[in-house]
Amino acid sequence: MTPHISPPRTATVAHAWGLLESLTDPEIPVVTLRELGILRDVREGAAGLEVVITPTYSGCPAMGQIEDDVKALLQANGLQGRVVTQLAPAWTTDWMTEVAKDKLRAYGIAPPHACASQASGSANVVQFAARSAKPEVVHCPQCGSANTTETSHFGSTACKALYRCLACMEPFDYFKPY
Ligand SMILES: [Zn+2]
Image (cartoon, rainbow, N blue to C red; front, side, top):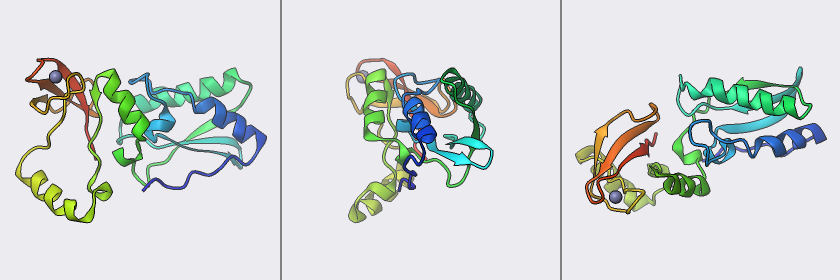
């Protein structure tokens, strides 16, 4: 599902990739933009270095901060670049790496469920039926209990829903899949 990411082509591009790979999400400082699938490409454009990012959803307020962070990091290392926001193909939670999901869980955010495209053929029918019949089960990132309930469809940011675990009573964010 993950679109092809171009390999580094020039020393400048390779340098920029090396720097940007460690850049973390402004809202979730334990995961990098690369791991989240937001950082798509670094390339030499007609007007110089271009950093391609795809917002997690249109109008995500963090994107302005991400753009500033990218530019600041490049400038601090003697590079000039511009940020290109690419809306198509649209970001999906499938682009998030398993490493990122593990880090989210450790941070106290329930990672998104895999989309139907990652499930086996026979599971698709079950998943579809379950999706239309009842809300998905979100496991508590603290204790792993499936006994959780959504308390607000919009958590600390619009990307997340606020849940509460009924086993350990801890509230937590759930990164909504789409
Ligand atoms: Zn719990």
